[in-house]
Length: 310
Image (cartoon, rainbow, N blue to C red):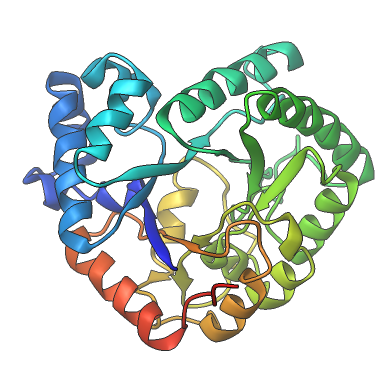
């Protein structure tokens, strides 16, 4: 039976909150974090969505603990609305800059993994490091040495979270070190499949010039969960990779079924994943998230039948 979820970035458009800027949304989170979570729970229920992935603020671990006091109480509050958690997004797998040691990177991941486990989730979705801008004098090449170093850190993180019963899954992010078909093949090829898993994002794979059906088809048995998102087509890799690059990505995002992703083909390969019954929609910061979630769910239901029970 198909179970639908969403990444909570879906609720990050200020229009939904009746304010003008994302900073205004964060002010609501600082003033009344419980309002953030309860409003999202109500929106998910209204849209017929039952699962969620937490992400960076305002729906991160810190705001949940401020609102409810513990991950267990967050879980209970969600269950009161008929909701549950699939995964927690973690922005910590970058050992370049910031002064963090590998030990600190692992420790930070374990903190979020323990929160995930206590909230009822089984996956830590990890954002990879971003690439350097192509013309940056201090550019970093994603070569075999880089892949080896990345794998060493990812293995240590994956082993540590697995001890808590939480799988570490690397997320594909356009303009990151894990975005092009070659990146995915090289890095997953270097990673031990017993310890590190895969979270493909269909839109970001498309932005990076890949075909999600082909890329995921080569690694379907490694997929812990996926972000079902549409995009109009590839972006150039030759743009500044800075704090605004994620906003540039949004210009290419489009409602499910109106972009370039072959959803029937993707559903076929996703059926071989570790969670074939879970379809985690991701709709970046849309003004009317309830309507967008309903549209996405109805599109998938109509075009892509759910997995057959055996």
